[in-house]
Image 1 (cartoon, helix red, strand yellow):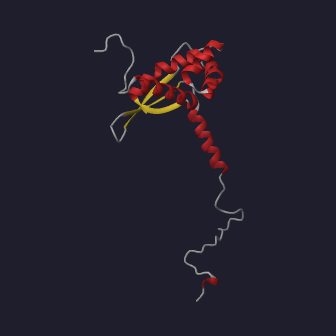
Image 2: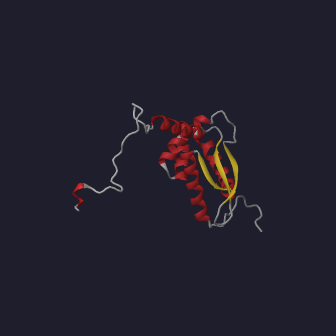
Image 3: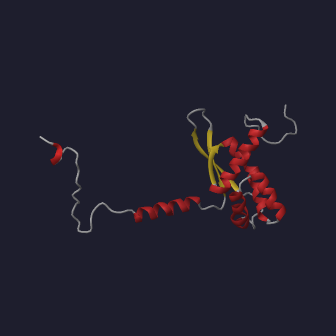
Length: 162
């Protein structure tokens, strides 16, 4: 029995679990949204929220602490420059977990999304796809006549011989 032991083991040893936690935290800080299994998302939530709390006050000690835990300079920079100021007025609850309702094909694990509460990941993706649709060239030329594309399919070239 596991008395007075916090956290889930997730079927991994200690070193693997620590690496998983670090990698997922870095991915969530960089992308602000990660699709994973529900138990991993629940186990990750407390560690990510502690990192955001560290990122709210920019001191040398906190920067070194975050750098030691995350092992990624870009993630530490984003933590203190973007995420810390974004949640400076929020007392807690920086992440949300949404169940996707479907299951992984291989093992039947329930999938979930863990993301930051005040993020704009979907808005950026939608605006990027809308800009790409506007910038995409049209198929018809300006005169309205269909273009005559030359195709060698089904035609013999003049130099092919008789």
